[in-house]
Length: 88
Image (cartoon, rainbow, N blue to C red):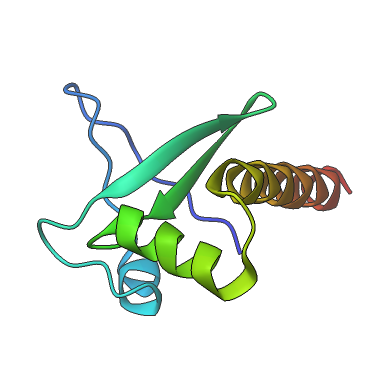
């Protein structure tokens, strides 16, 4: 699903309520903006992202750099698929 939002003079946007509810984003929480192949991806950030990454590493024993690359590739692939669907 796509959402259209306006950017204020100060560069601010409002995350649609449906997305805030779905991803449990509350006032004061942080989101991460990633530039992926010409597209902007917005991801909710964990309260303690380092701890979350470390717990992922413990579970599967992969280096954090490899996990980061996989997340980037996955976001790029999803972004490309959405772009193709939107172009139809």
